[in-house]
Length: 342
Image (cartoon, rainbow, N blue to C red; front, top):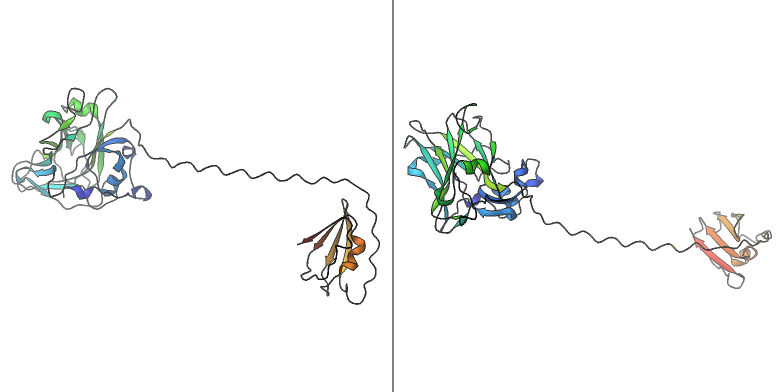
């Protein structure tokens, strides 16, 4: 399992929507040179990747994975990826026992690829995640301009002579190593004195410096990339929604002149059954008469019965009357009459 081109997807990527997504801040920067990253992680970084460095598939790959002298082979994946979003797509290898050592690595052919910059304000970190269960020393070789090489060693004992301690508990452990360390170990990055490109050479090697008879030493490698720790992730912001138009101001309240309103005459006694079952009440509000009709038994009412109550502005509030017929106000109302159905 060598994490070929299928280990990096081209879709939208949904990792951030999952509760299992374990991305640290190393995925929220910019300027990525990606060696190993499973599909969701690759999709998430798609617009921030400066250089793709994972091996390419057929038919004519320019970036390849080499098995050195048959000393390593593929090892089945165990568990999920470092970011817990995939069950495939990273490097999983083991020694064969063909030699007293083992190794393999990424190489580029004739089409140039870029290496990260390290000068003035440009810098980088190298991030890698490793998983193993056996006690052995493992080395990563980062190869830069003109085959310049920085070797990083990972031991199984705390306090050992190796550069870093890798627990052998079958769990992922990540390392974030600054450019100053890698350049200090011999790696030549891009700078004004070179082209910033490499061709026809290896650029990431996986080395087992000692291998027991029969081999079987295994390592898994994921989330391997350079990135610029000083560059924040660039995202396209959605345009702001236009401000909602302000509601028009309410029209001014009408002004009234308090005029004396004569007390209306008593309602004449109803004739026949016209108003049977209704109770009429009078209340003075400003210059208007408010007449409330409480529902009774007869739903019919004529304008003649209301004539004496229409003096100035008359508001008739009908609370329960459904059908009201033969209201003939126009000939009898001297000022204004507003009929308000409620």
